[in-house]
Image (cartoon, rainbow, N blue to C red):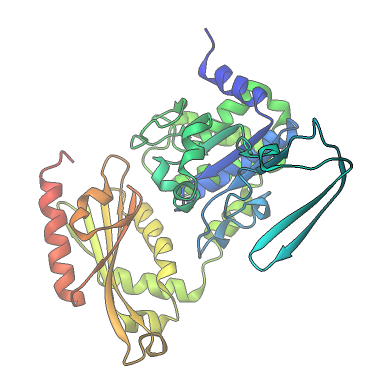
Length: 389
């Protein structure tokens, strides 16, 4: 009987065209791991593409090899085929012309004539023969990549690679290792089992970047001896650790650091600091010249600094400019909620119709900042009290 690793490479061998994709939330582990797999498959001589829903603030990982190859949509998944039966009548010439919203094909026969019965239409099979989803808990987490072409995902063989317990096992092959600290660790094991000689400096750099991003530079409390050994092996294969750390942790702007300071000033905790939260007003963003896109950096810092925190909430105001509203600016209260892997952030605030993923959810609250803070924290505390933390 074949191992899972062998089953995966059997599927890869069979496929002429492969799609690598990852969740729309663009976590560092998912992006870097996907790029490593993409580069490895190219070295195997495969026709492979990598795609994910576009993220506004997706430049943090642009230093990674292969990053520019990421596509933001699936184009030409199928071809529309028009067939002409030429058994009785041969073709002399074929031309086409556009006419407003029509495309006319002009076919000149050599002898005789064509009839409607000679014409049939069809669609080709899908462009890709295999999908590999990386670090993605469920198909819906792929966002528009999945929503726009759901049939493709149900009719094409799919390999699901992840390390999170929230993964729904949606693939035909589900390679999920809960003891791994990152999906990058799993992919290194997978590629290493096939051929370590094919893991070059760029692939090793992507894999190490995934592990560093997921463990906050090996500061999270789930780091294992195996993870450290994997990191050591990747560096021996040429992974550029200094480059990764410089881009991910040593390039914070002064504005972001000022925003961190305002978050820390108002930081509050409850349930023995298993729940921590802070609030930000519109003026906080204006005075620090920062934006809500910088808040994920703030959460990353809190995860590392307060390891006992299971849930982190940032409740903040944003303002819709007057040129958009057509009148005075409108303030909105927003919530960014992070939860560790065995707690569902979306479930904690389901009454608020959240978006995002199970580890990082977002919601909009129609209430002033302080009123929203009280309601949100009370809701989360009540639910956490019912969980075994």
